[in-house]
Length: 371
Image (cartoon, rainbow, N blue to C red; front, side, top):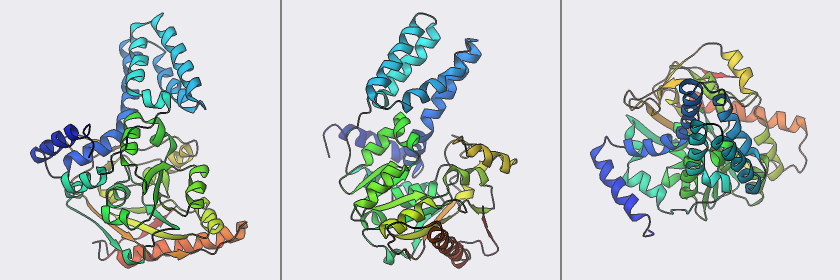
């Protein structure tokens, strides 16, 4: 362990002993996830509400424009220009752009932060991530996992992908079964959310990494034969999530099947029972919200732990099951008919996994709703 990590290790370990089991681990991961959006919303409220400044409604678009620029030179030029404009017009505006300079400098510079090879073990063994929940485990066809050329498609996404995170990303025994493993997540979450970006960089080693769910990233990982983990339903599954309901969004999710065929990969359906128990969700207008999702805009409101609402409910039982692999034939240029055929095989296998494990997971009467 590097000398610069020791203070963090010692302080975190001491804090973990003072807090409920797993609380600090959950706070680090979920807190880093929601921190960026929360800060942007807070500054929007300060500028538009307190300052009565219409610039507040430009705060989030300004940041998104910066992130989409193709090089750090252009990002720096854009934000420097915005800084000069803000300094000449309003102290509150200047406060906002300076906050971004301080917190989001790695995003502006497109910089990689140092990795910490022991991070995964620290989160699981020292901070006891899984112990935050009433029950939490990874089950299923674990003996059929191969070290390469496999996709693990996790369902459902839920609000903050708890099953994917605690029983996937931070399950040391699962991760070690892969020779090389790439987790793919939303591009903005991975590279545009500054504190979560730090978390992802810490996680990186020669054998594991967190990348983005872009075509380029997935094709690169598959060309190297790396195993891949992802939440296939995306935040549309967060939109349809409701307490007491088992729901997945998979009918239109055919892209990963096409790549599995093109590169000759196997794909495991992975289902987490209890993802719907992690938060209380605001429901209603589901079809409208799904239409809004098509524009890459999340439409989910949730509340979990009474102490910190963005944390999940400790009373949830997170039981994740890995299904049998589907061996996709290697087809250099798969046709739409090929993709449709194997997509149906995948959906049928996901439903079969759910039906086979629902009684063991304590939901014998539940039915999987497929969107």
